Length: 447
Image 1 (spheres, rainbow, N blue to C red):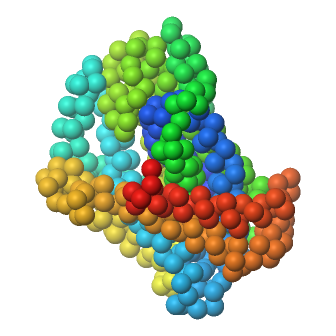
Image 2 (image 1 turned 90 degrees about the vertical axis):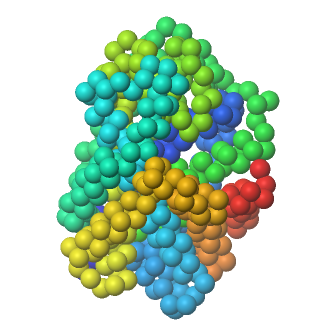
Image 3 (image 1 turned 180 degrees about the horizontal axis):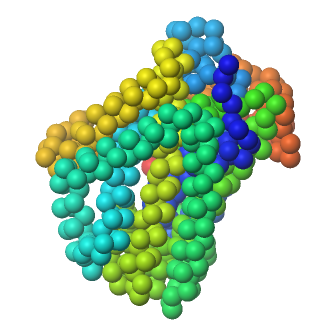
């Protein structure tokens, strides 16, 4: 008999934990910084609601319908092992494997930076000094490999316990802690003199700053942050009973994810403006700019410790859900017990992580399609596989499952949120076009 979630709250928190990751607290703020602040925020929220909620609903509903993880689930739904629609599962699981390969490394970086902040290590006092420290750190693979092994071991110990006793129990503890940390850091960031300028920049829309590239960036961020096409929501949905509220759960998850990203901006931008630092810092915002900020602000060690711990929690909740789906996919597709699947997934994740770590140091000159191994795994998974998986999901729901059948079955068990008639044009036309634009932008054909 297939295991089910212990409670609706457990499913919502675990799925929200998957969606809420470094994309919310790192990638979203730097994209806001690069694309003009408040106007980008408004466009992002609109995409999250109009595209994120329907696609998340569709993916969870496919999982609930199949009662299996993505690869085996699509084979059950299509009735064939060779249907092209099975690529929904294969693209999703492959993306999760590649993302795990570099996400474990990023979590290991956070573990190291958290320990450095706690012990008072010198991370540099200016962006130039913090960047030098960061580049030296990531190019020294030994400690990072060690921290990565600990991250993988932690994931294995949690997921080995199953859904209800494993990731659900951990999510019920970590997600409320994440919210408390976020709110506390936001209140502290807003309390600094001069923080109001950063708040105004963040919230006041300047639509003249929006470009076609900015809108595509907002669309891509909504897609990436929520985790559409990664097949994790599919897998988590497969543990739901048939009478569960799929549309309501999906709406809560997407709004939770969007709210976390919004609060992350309240932490970062007021503090940056208060200390005269530029919000337009790109990907270096996290390990370079913020580290320099902590060196300047009063009580920066405490703020920095809480900030990096917050990021660590967000990274772990996201990766645990992804790891669960990799394990469950091995169980469903290979007919092996959980303990053996956990061992295979843990060893595989660690082995794949090592080349990514080395690509930032000794293997920096190794190139695949002109990219180092880290950039390659990130590009293939984030720009191509997720978008292709999302596009296939939208087309399958609209034209194979069928709009009316999808609506009727998905609304079974629904409460305050239902798949409404006005979703029809979104599912059939607007969402496939929007996802195609994300895919074309990933290939560099537009933007």
